[in-house]
Amino acid sequence: MDDLTLIETLGQVSSSEAGSIFRNFLRGGVRQMICEVMAAEVNELCGPKHGPNDSDFVRAGSSTGRVIAYGQREDLIRPRVRRQDGSGKQSEVKLETYQAANNPEELTASIIQALASGVSTREMKNVKPESPGVGRSNVSRLWKEVGHKFVDEFRSRDINNQNWVGLMLDGIRLSKDQLAVVALGITAEGFKIVLDFELGSSESAEVSKDLMRRLDKRGFKCDRRLFAALDGSEALRIAVKEFFPDSVIQRCLVHKERNIRSKLSKKHWGELARLFKRLREIQGKEAAEEVVKELEAFLEGKNAESLRSLHEAGPDLIALQSLNVPNTLHRNLLSTNAIENSFRNTRNKLGRVTRFRAETDQATRWLSFALLEVEKGFRRISGYADMPKLMAALERPQG
Image (cartoon, rainbow, N blue to C red; front, side, top):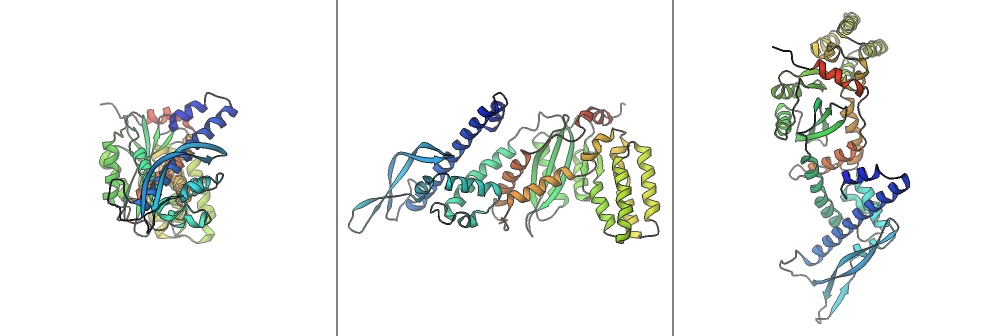
């Protein structure tokens, strides 16, 4: 049962039946993971199947077995391994992973919870040091295998048939040498969907363009002017404008307020916050322009850099208000908070993974997993009922 079928099924049954279906779904996933871990241990002992074997361990077929997953015994086919001593006598080898999986829920829950919570495979022993089947090599191998499935799932999703209205781009720092630019799309119904990401050493124009190029290839399009909320990075703006020349760019007001505040004395922070709060709540272009004038008057004479920062945003500062749409849409569309919150939760999922090796696809696997998990908690944007009015305002002028 895949995720979509599971969700559809849960929506058609009672809460008690839903709990049973979900537990069965989880047990199946745990059972599959145990089988993969056992296969990894056999490969570690005997070497690759059909390959040369210089060890004392040999494959000895398989037999039926049972493991405990979520409080119930699960039947499975377990591999068997024999070891030959110096006299030529063979003896059965008890697989450590199989023995550990027979401890009620200990191994299975530990592996699932630790991986889902962001514990690196390097430190899995610290989670359950007494379990012999959680050796770093086995868990690492399993995670690498399963991780590729997350990448395939993440980048094979159909984004061509959605009615896209908005786009948010922002960067998340993974390590000193690696950063990911992530794209989040907003549909006509107000749903938020993580679209894709691109890895690089910085939030450069080339990295951003590579991301937009992949989105374009996968079929991301907009039947009207695209609304894009950005954090102020010129590289991101250039990339969006290259693929959507007539897009409406909204500067993130949270980033802009933060930038201006960093240049002001603390005694002015309160008034700055009050004015930006008004700017976020005000409706319509004329009213927004009045607040911008108040901001200019407030900053003038206090700090030249803060005033320059305000002017630097230009018309992008009030792009959404200039469309004269209801201010019910302001909460989610005047900032990149939707994607920033995703990053906060993504960092929780990545947890203690502190070193991403650039020469491997480790970061791609972990980030695909984390973003898919974070997306499960998404809700529709505030004011989604007014999305048709935003779409009407974004229609291209006739003639």
